Amino acid sequence: KILEVGCGVGMDSASFAKAGAIVTGIDLTPRSIELATKQFEIYGLKGEFFVADAENLPFPEESFDIVYSFGVLHHTPNIRKAIDEIYRVLKPGGQVLIMLYNKDSVFFLWDIVFLERIIHGNLLRESIEDRLSRIEYTTSGAKPLVRVYTRKEARKLFCKFRNVNVKVFQLKKDDISIPFIEKLVKQAISDKLVYSLSRHLGWNLFIRGTK
Image (tube, rainbow, N blue to C red):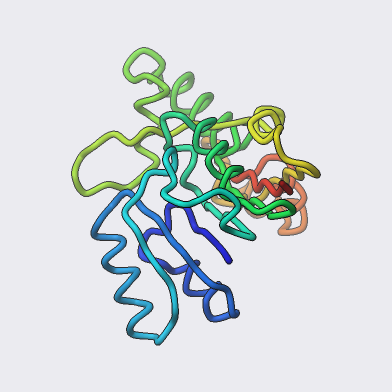
């Protein structure tokens, strides 16, 4: 039994269902829940979807074997409360699988902090919170909350869980941007080196833990 927190239109949930999981998904957006439900109907998959808030999960204690959330909880105002809720609805021995944005990444430290804010002079024009909000695409013009975390901070957030493992990934050559010599750098850096760097300086933290 898998709960996806922030399921969107249900793409990952569909993969879980196709593999035989009993899927439940929640999302704040009614339209996303409508589309996820429709997708499951079209492909003949079994699953339940609800409009709900990660900080107040509408499920009894010890309901799920796995809680999964990819790129969602760093938008939550009270992430500690959301993680406490995840812990509550997991069965003993259940697994949490979460992706958060990495503060110690090339994208954040180099592209956003150094190049954009210092070199290009955006330090006083825009707050770091406003800049991070522009990472996410929105059609409404809203400024979504976006937070970034170090590996140490991620471990602290999931301190209730046992066997917490934090891995870093998601780095591409295009992310390594050095003004005036970009093409030269991309030619000089091998795919093997990019992969090696991604394990330390990638944009995504993937957290796994056991209740």
